[in-house]
Image (cartoon, rainbow, N blue to C red):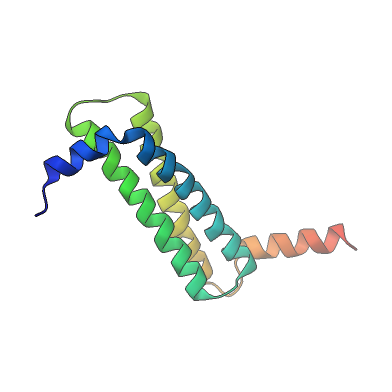
Amino acid sequence: MFDPISIGEFSRNNCVSICAFLVPANLLGTLLTLIFLVVKPSSLKLLTSVTVATLSAIILCLHVASWWIIGVIQAPTFILLALAILCISLNLWAIAESKKEEPWLSKIVKHTLKVRFS
């Protein structure tokens, strides 16, 4: 059965391990999304990257919420929540930007490479 109390206890008891996995997963997943936005390999790769990064950010938000539920309100919880919100925002922006003809980030990279190697 789904028991939110047990899940919350698990989250708090394994906080260091959970954060040690989710923080790099958020950062690397979002970085990969931004790289895919510039390189433009395929929509499937971009959507997969966005999905993985966003899910890890949502799980991080739920982990922070498990601490707030028991009354632990400290700087690390706000920092982790800000990181998760930033990653979600960047991933949603990347999806919106990929729908355009040529994203502005790709234009900047192409122009920089043209100027640098000309």
